[in-house]
Image (cartoon, rainbow, N blue to C red):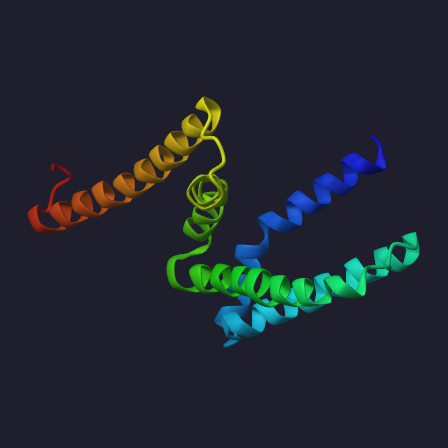
Length: 157
């Protein structure tokens, strides 16, 4: 197995455990904001180390304002909102909502930048929204079923 596959596997496993570790540290009293801060700091450290090792540390001074805006608005907002979602609604739901990001990119690109909405993009939007709707409906039906089961004392709807 090549190093590339190993690194992809490691990244996927790390990504998959974000919600689980988030819930674990929340139970210790650490806030979502603090989790997001440490996540960003540790990631920045590894990314910086990798950039130094590979000699890819140069950037144009004129790009600094854009980098600051992107890091503060994009990355910070993303990290904090994800950790808040994990705390408030659970890791599974937060992960599902996270994977709606491509839909938001497609929609914002269409409305803000007038990008063409192709058949594939449209199908992706419909599939993602349908998947989220199915998850929500499943949870709603499970809740209704549980409430009815508790009221009647049997397992019938």
